[in-house]
Image (tube, rainbow, N blue to C red; front, side, top):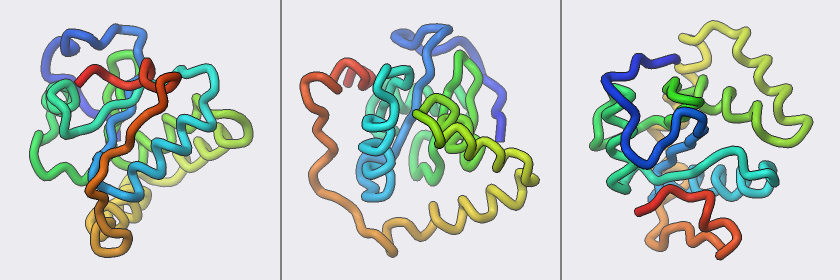
Amino acid sequence: MRLTPTGPLPEGIGEADRVLLFDAACVVCAGWVRFVLRWDPPGRLRIGAVQAPLGRELLAYAGLPTEDVDTMLFVDRGVPYAKSSAFLRACRYLRFPLPLLRAGLLLPAPVRDWLYDRLAKNRYRLFGTQEICLVPTPDQRARFLPE
């Protein structure tokens, strides 16, 4: 779903940036970030944790609660997307054939988001949590939002 920004972009995020926020405690989310790092060699996507201060500012910018976040957020050049739309739109910037997943946007958003919500609500129970956060390599560090 496309969200309506509630004000200006937080400082440190540029108008041309594409930022993917994830839950750093979630095993599935951390796996998704590792996947993105592998499949986005040019580094078009910046990455941040919803638990970080700048991540919380982006959540507020998108009009989402800053606590108990059950959604991925993707901000594409100032336009925030959540849930299945965030996932499918982020795939656009990954290597082929992953941009083809954007065809999923043809499905009605309520159907896509219902499926997304089922996974999001049960991700800790199904996959657990991680005590140690994802630690980027020095090469990957520049792709992450500042803490």
